[in-house]
Length: 278
Ligand code: FE
Ligand code: FE
Ligand code: ZN
Image 1 (tube, helix red, strand yellow):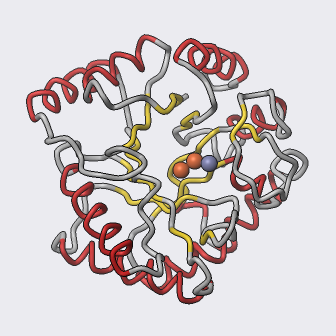
Image 2 (cartoon, helix red, strand yellow; image 1 turned 30 degrees about the horizontal axis):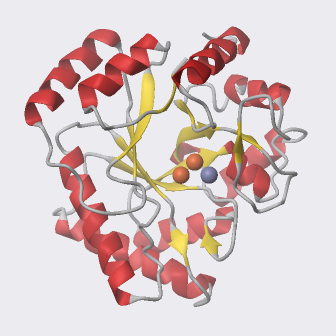
């Protein structure tokens, strides 16, 4: 089973991998830079080399790089969109040093411009970024399913389908259990039905990662408040169903619950104990 959690990137790649191993994880997620924006620290190639050797030895990966929350490709302000584009391009160039990584981003919020305009802005930005990379990207770029809070794009599977269609790029999807629950998907009582719909609207072959979170809110609340595993409205049985589902169990699971390292260690141990293929 591939399971891990979000980790602080402040100590670099090797430190994250060592932390992952110390809590029983074999994958991890990290922010490519301050989640509230700003410049990334210069890449330490010595650290990248040490990490790559350690990851290979310890069976770590795939790692999941998460774009900053301030990245909004669908913003109304030209400067907001320019920041999004420059940041994604820079992130993907840096990730060329860690081949095989996943890169997840929140599609964006249209801030009143409308879904159609938002989808168009996101799609055109992705095309320009891939173009700037010379059409080749070693990293799999993932659109995250969103809770549909405010004017978020990604609260409906159809939004992601539209971006995939419009770009014709090899994009993947990261399904966040808290987000889809908050967006109204009943992954507790009807996981099969939700996955059927995902398969029909997006295609399950696009699904490359799961953010495994419980939710503080009732289904359909469109709130996006993560809860610890088994302590929220989704519940432990439903999340055990997610990790053991025959169409999901091969995927990497990344916890983004409100936990410290000890809490993550306990959640990972709990989920491994519930996994039928651990
Ligand atoms: Fe996210
Ligand atoms: Fe998430
Ligand atoms: Zn969230």
